[in-house]
Image 1 (cartoon, rainbow, N blue to C red):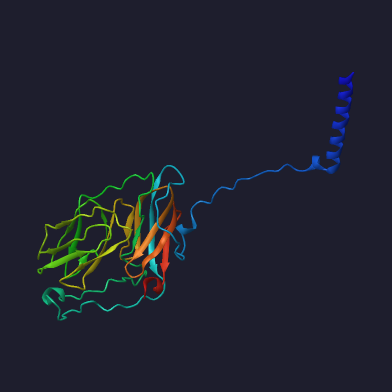
Image 2 (image 1 turned 60 degrees about the vertical axis):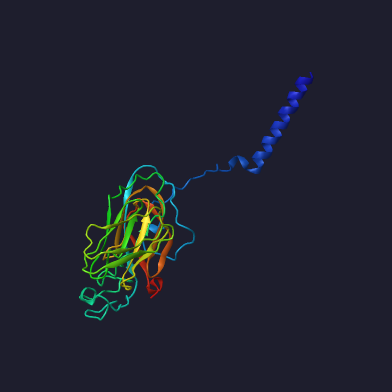
Length: 289
């Protein structure tokens, strides 16, 4: 009997609750749905004009998507009218070893801008560290750093660590090559006239930024080296173009460096693959002009 009374009371209570819910309109409320919006393809930093640099140190980031790799292609452009630079040494100037050093004028290479495209030459674009999961870029057996007309060739170069960089000279006068690295031992050695075999210089450690190279005999001579332990880096050509090959799919952080303005971009975010070439524009103030 107690059980029967209990069941009657339970049915009465349950009916009251259902009536209350129906009266409040809860039974007619639409179901709640959640839609997960996929991330947009590509990052804003991969196209368009470069913006103000972000803070922090460039790092190698884990790929956002597994599988595949592609090249990062881009240009660095001077935004505005580039300044006209006076040659460092005029043709026929009375300087040391003038028969060689002023046989032709020695241009000022602190800011080389293509008149047609306004592309900026000698800009370093690089990852400070190799990205996670990337296939290694094969290292060359050796690299060449030459001198001709009392001028370093090339003016800017990415050097692989632990690979010999052979310092040559095509001049009939002696030179002195002096490097100023931060992490590596400095090299300060004489380079004989017509040195075509090459004096080897090897960098043991990667550097965070390029450093200056000079000639103590001919002080107007200068160049920049960037030793890295990977191949994900490039220097812009005479049209301001660069290509970094074989970047794995995902997000990466680049540095952009030029001798006049130093860090043009401290943390440039890009996503691989990209839909179109990376276009970076900087005005005179960025280059310290």
